Length: 249
Image 1: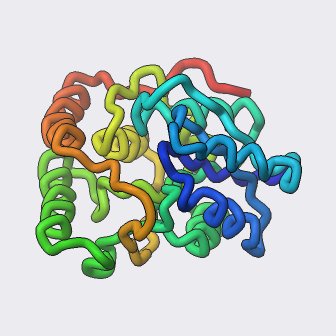
Image 2 (image 1 turned 120 degrees about the vertical axis):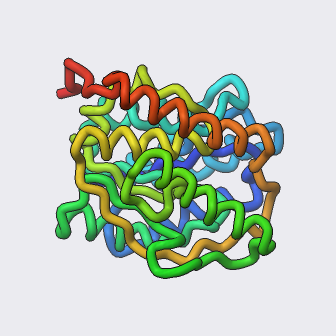
């Protein structure tokens, strides 16, 4: 078993899932893969299961009963990873918007450069986004600016979903207190890690919008992020962001 686990949530990713799994397993650094599957009607789970004999002991699937949200999928994966003593836990999309080759760079920043939480950042060296309409680029960029203004958090890409956590970060965060499920989840996890004193590093990546399958973005997810930031700041002022008392051994 590797000490690295890549968590990939899926819902209707039949066009991408086999390719992304094979790409991760082709990397020079051994990494295990956990698929958190939300009962996709398109047969995503069946594709993953058909590959499990080929990658026995490296490829795993957790099936859930429905589309329960990105945040709960990752928290499910985090708990699974902690129970199995992984040291480096990655978040990555299934649709190749995150280049699997960059997993190695995130790992290096965590292993060798002292990053407790490492972010694959679209905005640390300008705007590195491919295939997005200009309106969405501007919305995403200024959303991160808004988050920094409200939270005072020193992170350029606050909504990024390509990340590497060290085990100690996920042990310390009280996952039961994480409230949000969409893009606000990504902000909440970074903000909580920052408030708890962990070192956050950003590694520049090029984000390429999906070419296969359908986007999961919605107005409701964006609204949650906008309002959620204010809630996070208020909870911090009230002293409600604290480490959990009991760590997973």
